[in-house]
View 1 (tube, rainbow, N blue to C red):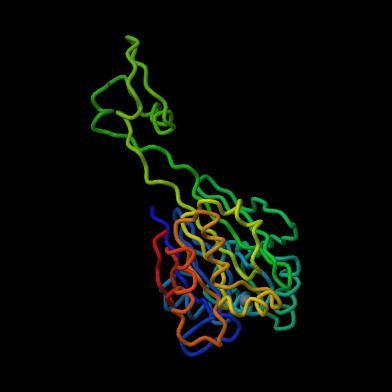
View 2 (view 1 turned 90 degrees about the vertical axis):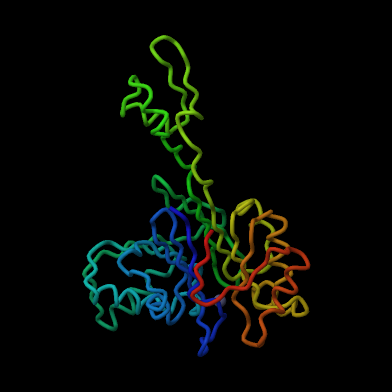
Length: 304
Ligand SMILES: [Zn+2]
């Protein structure tokens, strides 16, 4: 299975006719992760033809409205759609109080379990793991407590080459587990069948790092080293570096510098201030440092 990222919204602060605040949908190894949930995210999910029932894990970077005000509405819709499976919400300490207060005052009832994973550490930690995917926090430096998230496919099993395997009656189905793990097979006469003949190499495991609102922060570099794709906010151009620092944001030049130092495969910029009309100024600036920098397009589905 390939990994796809759909950019649902990439603007900062105020939604406009054509742009929505931050939200992304990451489909990795058949899991569906929603990352941030700005106002209007459920409409964007509809436009992207996403299946709401597939979203079981939501990761919120911080509790500023442009990253989480879409969450109460989305959760209310889940209930109206008859959801029964638990929903896991990861976010800063306080997210439970925020949501439960809204649900209480508005008498919004849920027919499913909401499992909160409140975060407060200032170092990277693994917060999700299954047999194919791991998710880690990326502590950031914003005006309030904020995390990015690193999503990693685990190393994949090798594929059985049935054409070769079927030539040897000694190899049974119960041996496939060892073959997929990369082990050779020893025949009863002692002859060693090399694993690379009996199996084929799987597609490389990919990774995606989401660096939400943050000042330029070099401590993220070792966490996101060599990721396949990095999203990094770039609210301003570098001539407004002072403004960026003051408001807890980064510039396109700084996002590109992080991408270069972390030796990532590709950089996607985002969270642009509404003061800019033509967004190509962001890639123009970023590409002076990191040529593989791109602008997001609304509802674009990017293969990771
Ligand atoms: Zn923001």
